[in-house]
Image 1 (cartoon, rainbow over the protein chains, first blue to last red):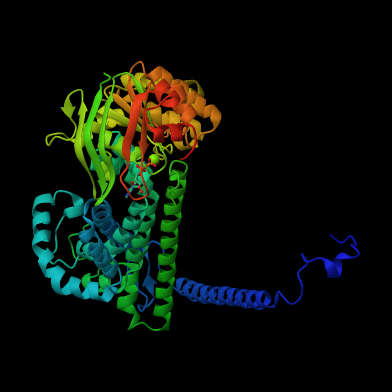
Image 2 (image 1 turned 180 degrees about the horizontal axis):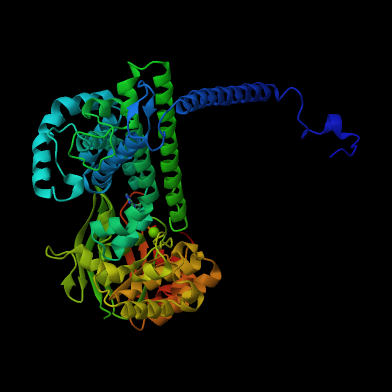
Length: 325
Length: 259
Ligand SMILES: Nc1ncnc2c1ncn2[C@@H]1O[C@H](COP(=O)(O)OP(=O)(O)O)[C@@H](O)[C@H]1O
Ligand SMILES: [Mg+2]
């Protein structure tokens, strides 16, 4: 490297001259500057949130992780994320259980069953639905869905009430189930849209391999399309789950909140972190806001854990996934 | 077991574009028939009409008759799914199911056809098929590993094993060696020679030495100009097609003057 090489300095066309690199250097400087600035801003935000959140937790008279109530304005302040974190996960699980099978079905219908003249407009509709703001789903949920799900709540409570999950001991349909349904409808389009893209990318080779063995269309989908699409569907589901976990407005509008850990999804009780923030932020004082920030950080951690486990699942399947992802 | 095929008045279309017209051909049971011809003359299309794979292309359709031991594959009551179970196919590019193990690849057809009975029987069929495909010794220690981890030649033999595991009556092969190295090609050619005692084999190849080596009968397809439908120019014993064919076009092609 440092060895002297006499006459290459001016003659070799391979050496970069000062004239060629100017644009590169400007661009490199700009992008590096922007990158550093962005990281700096993010670090500052994180530090701010951490400091505020931790200071609130220090002022908490209860155990922040196990307390169910959320009363930071009481004297002494008593609040914890046990109930709202539980509710966040529960409502999202309900949403996933309802949305993923339907979304995969819709995606398969568009990619492998519907004739082109139906599939293309349907694809546009799904893309459009994925872009509807959540407040619209919330309004629709409270005005349309809540009254119409009342009979379903009665029926489930009456017939399946012996299962703890479906025990109905309080009237009303502004429940975890309804919140889950609204969330499911909200995340369905994005899951369907991404899954459809993945299903459309299944190599023709794989599909023909199955068909030539005498597979029916459904068998072909099971043998070739679903295995190829699995990592993509998992990613799509995680995208939807991330949206469901963080959803604020729609849940806040639909759910009648009560901060308890409860598996009774037919009772108007339970709450989620995001909805709790939306509901409490308005009348919160400084300390109560810091407490909400602390709960927001917990939501962030939950989302991180969900994403990391999804990555693990996808990575474990990779060896068998061929070209997928 | 092996059955004969009689094709008459066959035409194939992609949308409104004809790709083949008026093909008449007889294929004896337990023989190897090679189909040769310049690229784009409709060899693959023809092969795919024999197991009703042509129609899986959107807009594609077939006219005419394909008789399998006297039964028309295109008569209204026939289910293409059952046709494809009876007539196996090996593609140009090896296409094992990438998410399945070697074992599951071979067993896939049996499972689809509901023929998979007991575990031990399945084990037997998988071993027998892999042995028939001359692959058993290379993979017996790693049956649970993904099929996509094999070399190209091994993958193609895996696809052959998968196709013969269901004991088809006819085996169709579309340029099965075109993606393979010479040694794997030899392995597959040897395999064809062994399989022909049990199966009726139709193989498309662009390699004339290969056609001469493996086949009993050769059919020459040609297309007048691009965009025209292809047609069967001549068909006969392989030795005759390669030494003194009746048609000038065939002679030009096999002597390498075009195509
Ligand atoms: N999927 C398809 N869609 C439309 N045209 C096709 C398709 N596959 C093949 N063709 C056309 O049909 C003709 C015959 O093709 P093919 O059967 O693949 O020829 P070969 O196998 O002899 O090379 C060609 O003109 C080709 O362009
Ligand atoms: Mg071809």
